[in-house]
Length: 311
Image (cartoon, rainbow, N blue to C red; front, side):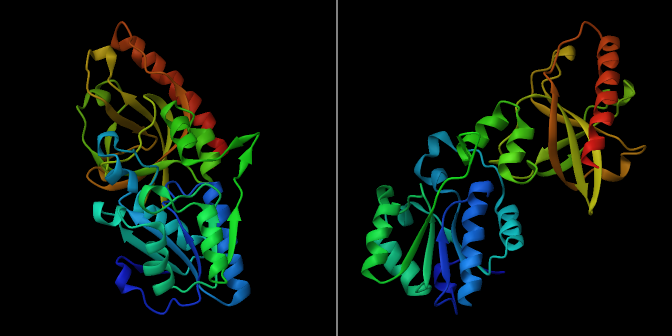
């Protein structure tokens, strides 16, 4: 997949089949758009081109309520390549760029650099100044220029429309398994493994703290989770506690994982990809460390049984 990070860098893309969107999460609804795009491009012998934005437009347009993201740009690029996209244009989204009208964007970016053979768009996608680039706007625009436009209907499951907003709500409420189903990939993120306080080792449950590498990463609801770490192509199952460790009267949110391996020394200070498979329970305050250890033993036994279905 050829990636362009500036509009004026785009080369040799005339006649592409094009889609436009932020595609945060690249969930199953987004994937339906991309699969339609690549199918049409293959039938036409054209390139499948995706135009997206970095940072997410909401980070520029609503700085006071900064949106937590489902995925990093690197993850998005990797998934788009897996889905068969040929060309990706990552448009730097700035305040100046946000003032460009929908028509100017189509004229100066899409037509000038891609002159598309066909355009594929999601049913609810909006772009351009004041979000005036609606599917209805594109219908008129494409008709005037003799370009075929495909508007893709939403993907639903049990009458629920799959959307980035709904998936964020699921994760924020701890429903990570359902979120992964709607995403079409297991929810997780890149993190660095660091040393913690060392208290877990004293409890016979040594843990490593993990810190997300992306500042705007959406975090799950505090609690205990069955997780899976990816390190150098290998999977390492573990039990994660995300919370404040109330038994020890702490207040800072910490994510710590007891990986199910005999020696964790080799994973410290390394980058790992953490996947959240299932939420086990809420974080609890225990009267003493012995009660906590007893609960942790139950949790680990349950997680070891539960992980079998992911092997």
